[in-house]
Amino acid sequence: MSLEFSNAEEAKDYAEYTLGVDDDAVKRLVLQSGITREMMKVLLPEKVIAHLRAISAKGERPRITDIGTGPGNWLFDVRAQLKEEGINAILDGYDLYPAMFPPEEKSKLEDISFSELNIHTKEAFVPLEKYDLVHIRYLSAAIGPEQWDGAFDNCMSILKPGGIFMWEELLLEKMSLNDPVKWSNVLAVFKLNWSILRRNDVDPKLSSLFSTKLEEMTKEEFTTQSLPEKGQRMQAANMSMATKELVDRAIEHGEAVVKHLGLESAEQLQGMLKLAQQDFKEGCVLHMPVNRWTGVKPLVIAAGRDPGDTSGDPENVQTGWAEAFRKWLC
Image (tube, rainbow, N blue to C red; front, side, top):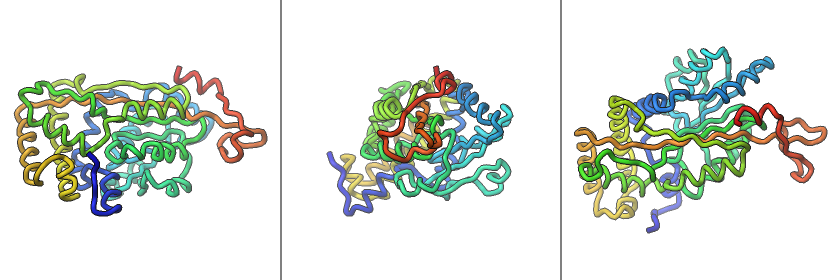
């Protein structure tokens, strides 16, 4: 069923982000970041640390950016890891919603900058710095099925040749409930959320983009099932909060969205949400698999041209690899 809106601007807004951006959303993102940290154990794998350390050894400060940073949790965690490694990097966070940025005092204390950026606006990426590491996490809620290629290419445009691209996403199509029969309310509302997100092609899409546009693509798999009981209960709370945000945002966009979901009214949708939230309180756990894609941007070298300059006629450039960049992902 196609989703129809009263005007183009309404459709554009709905496609950009389907979760909340208020104080409650910030609280959920902080919780979500903690859960992901426990699940992954190490945010920057040793091979990525080795890449950043090699840059530092040349007397340079590695440049790292987090796209769709929200309150900047990933950047703060990375700053802590880099301090332990003795790496003094430049950290920048970008997001479409500055209201979610952390307090300025906290940003200054950790020497992290935050700026507004729309991942879909190519022109906004042109004046940005080039980075040694570009990171994205859980941004599929801001990218519609027809927007993947453009968003990916925009991020690639600020990645240095030889730089690393890391993208982590939830795989909605592979989620699992601890008891689908018992927790049927969560299952029902989650199927609606799946329709709201329209993002059930994340794995094949990102795997294709990384394998065709980057060198030495790797894909790591994680799951909240690996968490201890306390962590799984935290994940249940996280999913309950995210579900409420999805429903609230859908209702905000009016009757067109509610009808698209096959429901008669916003009240019916809110009723389903309440039943699902009760399931979460009573012990429902919704496990979410997460994939992390990593790849390296090929070096582009032409006679008399700096490796960082990718302009010019593609037929006159040669794409090659320095052996050091081949080794760290092998």
